[in-house]
Every structure is written in structure tokens, then in C-alpha cells.
Amino acid sequence: MTVQTTEKAKIFDFSHFRGDLFGGLTAGIVALPLGLAFGAGVFPHDPQLGATAGLWGAIIVGFFAAAFGGTDTQISGPTGPMVVVFAGLLASLTAALGAANPSAAPLDITLMAIPLLFGAVILGGLLQIGMGVLRLGKYIKLVPYPVISGFMSGIGVIIIMLQFSQLFGSKPDGGTVFAALSAIPKALASPNYLALALGALTLVIVFFWPKKIGKFLPSTLAALIIVTIISMFIPGAPLLGEIQAGIPSFIIPSFSTSTILLVLEAAIVLAVLGAIDSLLTSLVADNVTRTRHNSDQELIGQGIGNTIAGFFGALPGAGATMRTMVNIRTGGVTKLSGMIHGLALAAIVLVAAPLAAKIPNAVLAGILVKVGLDIIDFKYIKTAFKGPRWDFFLMMLVLLMTVFVNLIIAVGVGVFLAALAYVKLVGDEQIKAVGEAVPVRVTDEERELIEQSDGAVTMFDFGSPLSFGAAADLGHHVRQRMKAGSTAVVLDFSRMTFIDVSAAHAIETIAMDAKDVGKLVYASGINETVKSKLIGLDVYKALTQDHIFTDRTEALKAAIAATSGMNKTAQPV
Image (cartoon, rainbow, N blue to C red; front, side, top):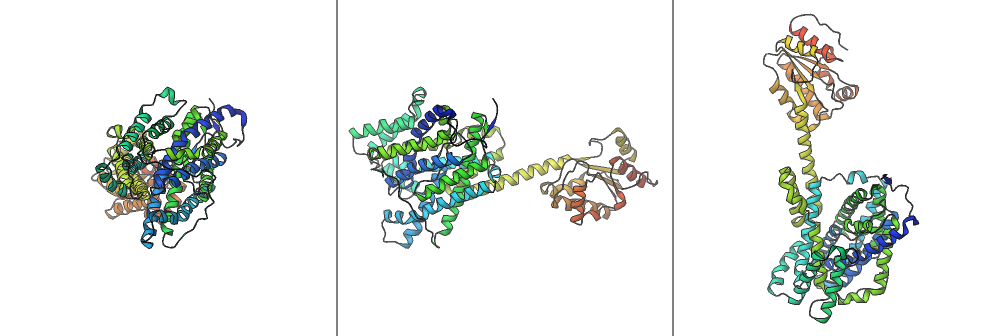
């Protein structure tokens, strides 16, 4: 099958309309309970408002990200990571506003936070558009897998924690992990047994729903319908309540000096996290469909969707892997499938919104617990001990920091530590590549010359480019492996294509140390790139100018001649 790119794809390509129709409708059906659940979980003091925001987030982001994005089969909408960041911002804003307005009711404080909250969504969307315009898509994907795994698993844990008390018929007083943890003892001490039974039944259905039936009726939607109908005959569990049936109101974002840093931080996290989430889903779609997405265009599409969503009070979204796979498996091929997904959801919301009033909160909590478990990277956790221990440690560190510290700090620390570990690994390999004397790849003539010197000449072959990761130990390595009794050293740069500042100064130290103890220093094979760098850093003068040769063999001959008191046999360059 040939690989296609999305760069030439048309928005209104009706050549696969039948498949796009079925794929979009099926993805819309799957997105319905998830939109309700995500939204209701975000606003603990007003789940109806949250459910409306969740559904319209799936509609708006799903439609516009598909229309303007760079992945033909991508289905976008609220996802676990995006919702957790959004809920964390809401909790921070309500805490700040609550401290400034101690007499205000929790619901009033939530309403006060909305212009700030969705201002962050709008700003995050604009940042994503900027990322796409600046062509940063290829860099955003350069996050190590253990960091992504730990972050996503941490998100899964947070979702489960936030919903745990809801399964028992109560709810946490806020959207933070610590609020969720503090609500668990109370929920266990005085459970609503009907809510617990409904939540448990929901979990049974979403985990054990037959796969054959799931092709036509997804497990999450089946659980939503079946358990809601049962609850209508056995009342007593907390219900979602009626949600807004019409088009949501336009929101004018606002910013305040006391909360601007919270909003800005959340906007950056939403933008970067949404970009990573979407582009990873794009890669999954590429592998299945044998196509190639346009990363920068995908960021622009996601940014447009999130910006518009913010103006209408809808949850932010990103590419959703499960919904994208459902779309592909049921026939979706072009961007029309994602747009149909959004339109189908809009039709359902506008027509059937009053039915949501009968949905038990425990059902939505059960659905989100399943989502949280699906996000946790159990596959990697099971096999982690078979791989590098450092990677598993990094994954667990990021997971714990995601749950108990801060999402952006967790990713930042994870990327920083992963980069340090990689630099150390590369540096160690570069040090190993610095060969010495006979073990180096040498010609027969060079081997004879080295043996002829009888230990008076030591040769080092810099077997690869040198980075700052190798620079710290390079001088020690050369001193340690210098032959006892040698009076000359040959430094071969033939395989060094470039050099950084740290390595250049390490070369200077090696040369000066050798000269200080009376050893002759010869160099060979310095290309123009390395030479210009050494000259620019004022390091080139540390090498004796008439001891610099183009050919390594000639440098060896010159070093041997000098150490044996003979005349030089070759002319330096």
C-alpha cells in the first residue's frame, strides 16, 4: 500500500463518503458518554454546566480540528490529560477567588472563574496555532517515552482518584487530587449503596461488554443507557440533572492581575499537552492507515478548535486515540469523518439533551474510571524490569510528580533528567570510541610504525564527534591510557565531523598537559569545520603548528622521527 500525505488532502472529499459517514457517526456515539463524563467530572459544584461544556467541547474541537487539521482520520475532543489540566486550573482559580470573596457560595465562585478559565483555553488555542505557524510540530514529538508513559499514567491515576468518591454517591470538594483523597474516607464511611451498585454495574458493563456487540453499540454507551434505565425504576442515586439544550452562550474572556500567572501557566500546559496528545494520536493513525500526517497543520487545526471552544465555554480537546481508532475501523478515511462526528453530536445534544437529567453521576464516574485505567500504561509497567532500570525510575518519578506535584513540573523534570541521561550515555560511548594505539582501526603500515616506536609514540583516534557529555572525562581518559614512557602523542581527528565548545577546550587541556610534561603533540585529519571552531575559540594555537598533518600516517612518521632523533620524513600542512 502506498504512503499518502495529508498535505494535498481536500476538506470536502466525497470519494469515501459512505465510510466517512459511518466512521463519523460511530465516533460521535462513542464520544457522547465520554463528553458527558469528562464535563461532569470537571465541575463538581455544577455537573450540568460541566456536561454541557464537555459535549460542546467534543462538538466544536471535533469539527474544527478535523476541518483545518493535518490528520485525515483524527477525531478530537476532550481527553483525560486535557480535562485534568482544566480541572486543576478551575480548582486553583476557585481557591484564589474564594480567598478574595470569603462570603460567596461555591457555585458563585465557579461562575466568577469561568471568564478566566476559558480565557486560558482561548490563549492555549492561540499558542497551538502559533506552534503550527512556527513549524514546531516535529520538535514537540521529541519527548522520551518513559516521560510520556509516566505522565499519561499519572493522568490516569488522577482521573480515578477524582471519581472514586463519586462511585459511592458523594463528590470531592474541589477538583484537586488532595481534595479527592480527603473525600474518600467520608465516602467510605457513609456510602450511597444504590450509587455504588450502579457504579459497579457500569464497570462490569464497560469491562465485559461483548466485543461483537461493541462494534455496533460501544460499551460506554451501553452502560450509559442500561444503567440509566435501571436507575429510573430504583430511584435514590444522585443524578446529573438537565443540561443546556441550545447553542452555548458566547463568553468574553477576562484576565485579572491576581490570577494571570495561573491562567498563563495553564494555557501553556494545555497548548503543549494538547499538541503532544494530538501528534501521538496522529502517529497511531499513520501506522494504521499507511498515511503521513502534517504535524504543523494538525497543530493549527487543534488550535483553531480550542480557540473557538473557549469562546463558547466548551472544554478544550486534543486528538483522541480511541475515538480515532473507532473512526478508522468503521470506515473513516477523510476529514469529513471528523466533521460528521461533530455534527452528529450537535444533533444529539440539540434534540436529546433533556434526557441527560436522568443519568446517575455514578454511571459517569464508572465510565471515567475505565478511561483512567485505559490511560495507565500497564503494558510498559509489566515489562519495565526487562529494560533499563533508569527508564522505569524516570517513568515512576514523572508519574508521582504528575499526581502529587504539578503536571508541567513533572514533564519538565522528566525531559531534563532524560536529556542528562542521554548526554551521559552518548558521552560514555564517545569516550569508548577514542581508540588508543594498536586497538584502533589502523593500516598495516601504521601498525608497523607504532610497533617501531617501541612505546615512544601514543596515538589517539577520536572515533566520533565529541560533545560536552564526553568533554569532562576526555582529558582524564587520555592521561590514564597514555603509554608509560611515551614522549609523543598523536591526536587523530579524521572521524571527527564537528566539535562543540566543551570538547574543544578539552582538546586544549590535553595538548597543554602533554606539553607541560615535555611530550610532543601531533595532530592529523582536522577538517575545515573543526579547524574553524578551534580557531574561533582560540584553541587551535594550543596545537604546535608544524606538527599538524592532513594524513595520519605522515603524522606518525613525524612523531617517530622526532622521538628517535631523526629528521622529519614528511612536510606538515
